[in-house]
Image 1 (cartoon, helix red, strand yellow):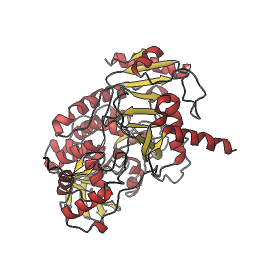
Image 2 (cartoon, rainbow over the protein chains, first blue to last red):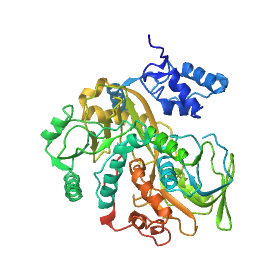
Image 3 (tube, chains in turn green, orange):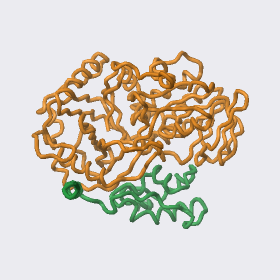
Length: 96
Length: 403
């Protein structure tokens, strides 16, 4: 059985990947996100941010609470292009 | 990245974006110089981490065509040389035009590009549809951007590419550090003073004295230059991008619309990544604005659905913004800054600095190392602006600035 521990399921980022990033000196979650790609898939970190933060904290010897989360990007939930396109049109109508 | 900041360097590079890191790497590879790269944030925080990853050779000036031919070759060998996957995919770039004027420009560009041995060609709309079957080429109601069909011309170069930008930064940074470069992140330069011929740079990490300073801070460059009394005429312009959920590979080329500035590509990770021109905001203070706007999201969604109606059910997962660093004539600003001996700039790349950095940095390092300057140092010199500095004649103006 594989001993891989997957932390980010969208992008297949493992515990070992995160530990490696920390070893290279990337100890902010923003940096770890950019180095490993965690949190960039469909869940946008909603499932994995806590797990990765704990892994980074443990590997870097800091408290999880001391780590700032990465910037949350809109939209809040994955949203269909068709819905956004229609929203834009509707918005256009009510504007002078 | 954890090494202490040295007190002294031969060269201090301000900005650990792709341009600054690549210049530092190439200069270090030439030996002899002590080099420190300073950045206010972390790697990939700025525009190098926020761009769409397009690497194209379709330009309207011979300088840019030839430079990008060289740059794309560097990109093609980057993974092998640096030992890092950059997710490069050569699916080409497809440009679509709706007006006769734009079509004529494309034809002129194709002639120039062919003369440079680039295999670009004008293709029929049927060929464009064969390349991208999802494309709506019939005119329709469209959106505000008028992005449904109505195309009159298309051109395609199969050798253009897309990359994933972030690994380029790790690759250049790791290779530079292996050659002795110190990279200090989280170290904004808050003051630059002259001491004799040297520059004294103040940062929270300590003070650094350097013989030469290279400002490669992108849209933040005017602010950096001001610290030592220099003036740069480039301005930051917010551009936004969205990314969708990953899809099975279906979109071969980067598709770009001349009139609306819409562009979209499918990365090797499967997601669609793209942006569109928005009206330039008033920004007299030259602030770098990185907030995301709903207006962009809806404009881009309208444009994409009109361009490829089948995308209606595809979900957007993320949007973000980055600054284009735009000079008054659209061309970059490189070389010494007039009136400040020892202070050099590499900025004003107008949203295309990422793809140009591999080649520009290589020539920049050669120049700093005393070799004869590449012709772009003349064409893009900083003193073409300033008092009485006019924009170059129309023939030199790059027209293929998209997004």
